[in-house]
Image (cartoon, rainbow, N blue to C red; front, side, top):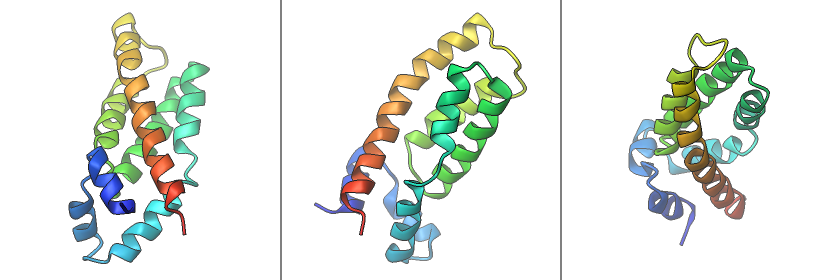
Length: 123
């Protein structure tokens, strides 16, 4: 298949994204490839591991914007949930910790799949 078809299979709203890029598939692909270099995901993961939740929120918020602009759903939805869990938090409640642990594995899996597809199709 191809890059856009592979992303569609994952549930990425490619058609909506291309429309956002005024129908210019090449421009959309250019920004998708740049997503590989975005460090927000790694920063988010590291901040969560170190329990630095205000910084994790900043990374999550940044990643949410990038994913939203590229229509990288369902990753966008998971990052949005995570952003709300982390919003205005110095520490997390037990309930927030559980929500975080419920979201993270699937979010990491979706992120890794998207990155793998992008790297396989890098030009």
